[in-house]
Amino acid sequence: MRTASGTVRQSVSLPAGVATQVRSLAKARRLSANRMLLELIENGIAAEKRKQQEFFDLAERFRSATDAEEVKRLGDQMGRMVFGG
Image (cartoon, rainbow, N blue to C red; front, side, top):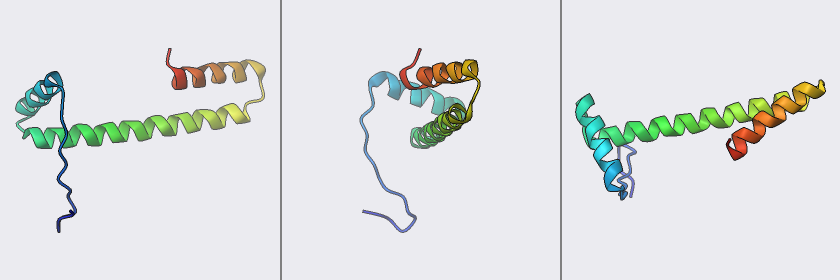
């Protein structure tokens, strides 16, 4: 159910170690654990969007590359982004 402010109450279960880290970070920054979770989630979403944009930029450079050495280097870089390494 949506409230007038546009917020949604959400319940999540956290592993004990993660919950301890969240509380510790919140205490250090003088925030509530709830606010700390919100900031961590927002930062994570922003990081995922940046990572996705970097991949699309790299893919565009890969498609437009004409030098064989450059194509190999960009292909290797894309592989590391997709499969790790």
